[in-house]
Image (tube, rainbow, N blue to C red):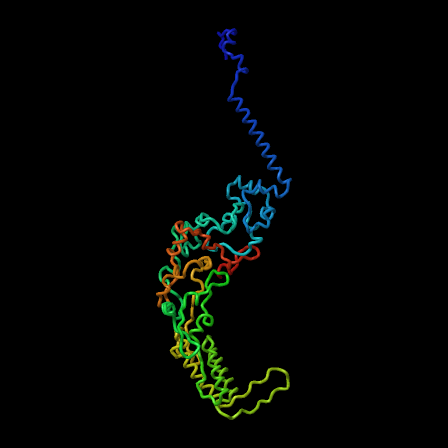
Length: 453
């Protein structure tokens, strides 16, 4: 404001009358920048609203960061299969990453099966670990950071962790494998000696004649992978042991003619069944009885003929004389003595729990051979076929005790599964989070079987 003493004629001296004519480059560029930004924003809005009118193919390059995973490729062009609610991505933009674009109910329409661990304090959403539109071929192979978000400082409902409470990755703070922790022993009770079976000169096996032969065995003679090439099939007597350790049973009594002699030789070629002692007794009694009836051993007197029923149906068993029955008893006692008490019988491999249990038969301990050594991990022998067996099971050739644990240690696996080894070492390489045996009901809730009740 001008003072009262100011002369109005001095006003043109301090007013810039040519202000609007002066050139101001910064102001001009500022106006152009604002106009360009407004125009670009308007054009972008038009482009974002245009693809829905061009069809599903035009939506993918605009709204997807990358294609969906391989498992979901069948509805790559049908976004509504997963995105059932509108403006969910906009909600993520406003609220942060707490709001997922796809909720669990949508995933459970197809993946209604495996559940989360019932001991965990927080149940994450499906999309928090399995993130789509990242171009991953396998959606189940999640990054280690997702696993470490809980397992680096694991909290459980009971307050105790079953194995380790702080695991970030396999090279970092991973505990030793369970079988190598304190007091780890092979729970099998069958006597076995790897050192004897893996001798360089081979082992003695029954030959074609009376003289035994030598055969060189390797690990694959007993350990064969399953059809999937992942785990080793359980050891089975008929498949792995019977050829070298037959449970032979012979007719000890004298035979009267060549026909009976040939039948006795055929009888000796059929070993006793590898079953419980009471089953072995029943099978051998029936076999000796059939032999006695077919060849009239134990006496020449024949039992009276049993009249057959005129009605259709199975014929009655032929009768047996008292002499034949006594012969069957003597042969059965001799066979049981050979099998249950002999040096090459059942006790050669099986530990005896009780010498004379029910019906005078021995009781053996359960074999208790572990079918899975590392049940909390997954493994594939086919993927490791370029390695020799002793590369991972180094102690097998020198093992002389059944209780020896011959599984690889963490250090053995880290020779390859580590940054310096070149093989994958992420959590998903060996571990599955969801338990396929712990199912959900049709409504997506945990079942009693999944809780172990």
